[in-house]
Amino acid sequence: MKKIIFLLLTALFVYSNNAIAQKLNYGAKAGLNVSNLYGNNQDKNSLVTFHAGLFTQIEISEKLDIQPELLYSRQGADIKNVYKAKLDYIAVPVLLKYNVLPKLFLQAGPQVSFLVSDKAIFYDDNIGTLDTDAKSVDFGFNTGFGLHLADGIFTEARYNFGISTVAENPDIKNGVLQISLGYIF
Image (tube, rainbow, N blue to C red; front, side, top):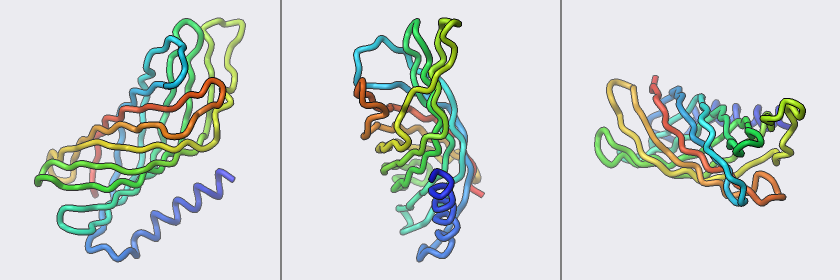
């Protein structure tokens, strides 16, 4: 099922080349994730990880773009003195990007993420590593801003608010701050 979804998303990116847009740009980005899990009473710290991927910018007007992305994103949390939850996703945000000034932009939009790997790495060596039983699909909403630094180079910061629960018991959701550096080809 995951392979079929991945192929469909890849086809969406290829198909966007035939969109009714005035201008189409492609790019790549990578950066830092500061993630946590919210909704339970466990004492936890943020997990500092990474994300990387590709995107397409479809120009709607001079100030407005639609930006679908395909990212590999590691998320999770450090449950103090117990374990680190590491959740790897293929994330597909679809953002509305508003160019406020020539160098400043705002962005917002939904995201669907598909679980690739989930691990609970326990501090107690006798337990080792186990699956977290996280759900295979996660929904969120992104909001953020960015700056165009030079020819094709940009930086951005965004926050992904988890909408769906990662696990039912306890009822927890993802929360991820992403700081990226990217290049528009």
